[in-house]
Length: 541
Image (cartoon, rainbow, N blue to C red):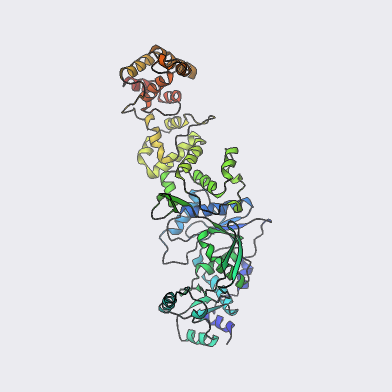
């Protein structure tokens, strides 16, 4: 009996790998086009780090006219959560990052290189495992969980590196006949890779992001096919990335230490290995210490957080691109209205260390993104968010015609308003356009003086005034009440007046809105209309 007979005994129905090589031919893409993938497991919520990887992978493929696909790595079915696949697909959709091919729903996919769910590719993995056994590069292992645990305990006691390798690989040196007899006797087994590596030898590798790295060779005989017939991550990813013709594997740098094993698997199967690009994690400042964003501690670690808060997907993507390429910020400044798709993204310009997550910066980008939207866009997106998360805001926005006027204030001009960074802030930012103030803080002009300013202004207020006439009447009111007509005059001689026209404007602003900082008061008054403005000013008398 030889290895071929053993392989046939283990996988009698598996097709030759030539069948799959023929079925999944090399892609016909232009020279330099790269193929990337986002390959999450449906075992929990999508992490912001996962979205970051997906964005980098999509940008890298898009820039070269390549392909970005979504593969679901669901071979660890014990840990899979309900609606896990749908959650992944919806997260990409929410951020306008639909893949070129791959899973498009829990059951549907698009593309010629599927199935794109690993659990549906069992027969493919078994064909390649069979091929490895035929070559004498993989073997059945009959060790029980208890025996493997016993090996580990002995290694720990002897302070030896743990694992199934060398003299500790009990089944590695069984003869083909011994292996076959055990299988015929019904003994349970898994399939292990027969590593040719030695730990005392080094491998050198050039990572696209990290640069030159050096590791000991892999000498572990890892499991490639589990007892349930499904592959482990290591084996599945090698088979899939080969057959799906992935050119660049973009993933978290926690996988960097697996590079020796993964390169070895590609080499032993006779495949050309993809290029690896290991991304540094997004970090958080925790009382002066840097740590990874935690699923347990940090709500912002979950991609769903950004949707719930109403942070525009565009802002999140721009923020992540800021982290990805330090040149993005200057590019955006020089090209304020260009699509991010036009940015010359470079994988090899990514930072080798983890960037600190900065919510203040993200929300600042959110303000800029929203400031460029039309009133109609702001209305639609606010309403869409409100329907899901804020019934009170939904009710406020029922009168679309009026809401569009509210959102149109100081919008579409050279310096548009930047008071909204996320949709969950909309209600707080516009409520004064729907309700008269309940309390007032006029700042410098208080009490009777404030009332006098309002009385004098009411005498001259005319809703039909243009902006210049409107402001001149505020200057007249300031003068009548004993305040400097111009701020410049006041600054030249502050002892002469108790305040200036700006302080008078503040009284009117606070009386009408309850706030000292708002967008353009002239526009606010026009939208509120004559009756409402007079009614609110009269509340102070």
